Image 1 (cartoon, rainbow, N blue to C red):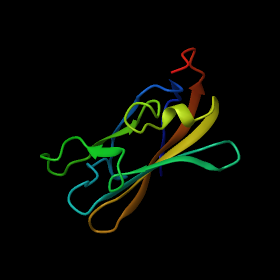
Image 2 (tube, helix red, strand yellow):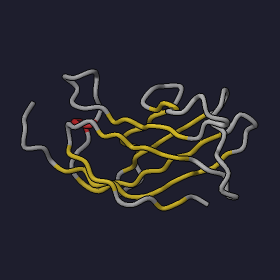
Image 3 (cartoon, rainbow, N blue to C red):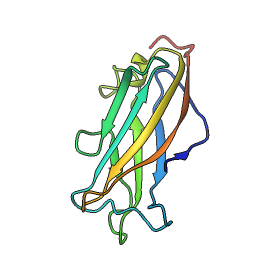
Length: 126
């Protein structure tokens, strides 16, 4: 069963890091070793996907690859499009929901976390 994470909030146009430590239901570290898949998705209140990041496609990295097994990752929503092809400036202020799903190298699928995100309007124009 996925854990409900505390509500997140970020400002449109900012870099927003989300750190995650993944586990199996028994509490042991979830294996994010070679062949693992990590997917993160953010949806509006109508269920439309507004942002999707993956380990393979970019936006997610395993932060402890030397651990046995590695089980920590960083999801990064990048800033304004002017800076490094970012995503957060394109997200309209409002309330969203997100979920994090991982598949270990053996094919075991687990939705790790779900919760809410509030995106606030930036006072800056660039």
